[in-house]
View 1: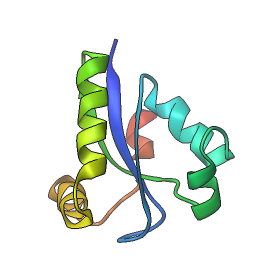
View 2: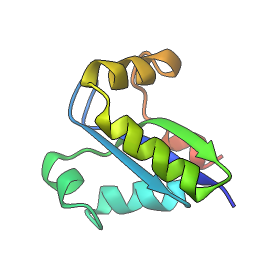
View 3: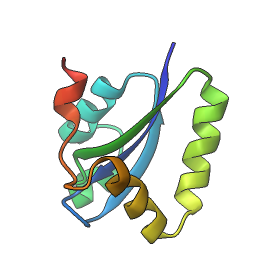
View 4: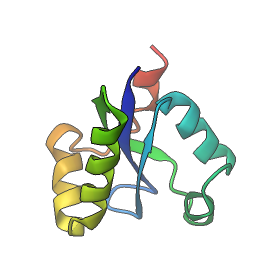
Length: 95
């Protein structure tokens, strides 16, 4: 089974949310429906801009915790390394 650490954004350089899940497509759908996260619902943080896959849940959870402690500039740099335009990556999940 795969586990994912992901970053959602409200828009380019907007509000960020970092999470972990074992089903990324479902979790992004839940965020967009306003299910499971008051924060993403309130601030309309629905654009999937970054993701990493892990084989072990412990590693994914540790990575999520580490990234949440990073300064914002580091998070932005991580996103822009692979997704400089902050494109919504959700379509990749549905292929």
